[in-house]
Length: 252
Image (cartoon, rainbow, N blue to C red; front, side, top):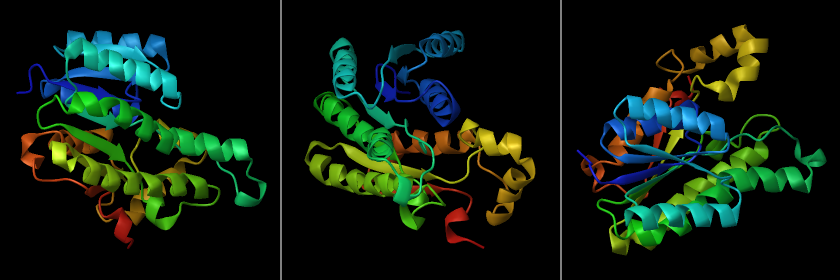
């Protein structure tokens, strides 16, 4: 078990982040749940505690440099260490073709997916050095390789950057024994796809046809891999990106 070890999961009040936090909690970590919906955060922590998980909620926006730095430092100083940082927060941020894309939209998407990883990782490093089998786990996407669908080009660009910063961090932190890896979820059945699921359910259901295993992923599928990456079983794994997409990346 991982009693006494601390894991921070950003964007953990719903979807994949929630399942990842719950899984790490069951693995024995004290889980720091991050989000921006404070009511939801309190609800999640209450549920975790009822389930025997040691958890705390820290509400801050991962794109706010000062807030990230301040809160991650608070966690590190309170517990004297950070063992796992899961940079789960991120998202599409909307869709826009480049010709009409505003600079504000561009910066917002890059901030959500890339700046957040940089801010949280930088703040956590001094405390990861004090942890055991310390690791950072980031999230990239198929869009980082195929550049995304219509209007998602800057999302794909930001996720390609996450792939690279994962490898760069791994190089930078190897001397301290801190591992850095990424997961690349395929189509996972979460609220990320809420709009199309409600407006075009037949299109949403058809996506499974483009996946080798003929089903959409579940948040638990990602949580299991993150649990592995945070464990001693992955102690010799760094600078890697694991595709969690049922073979979706290869196409059919």
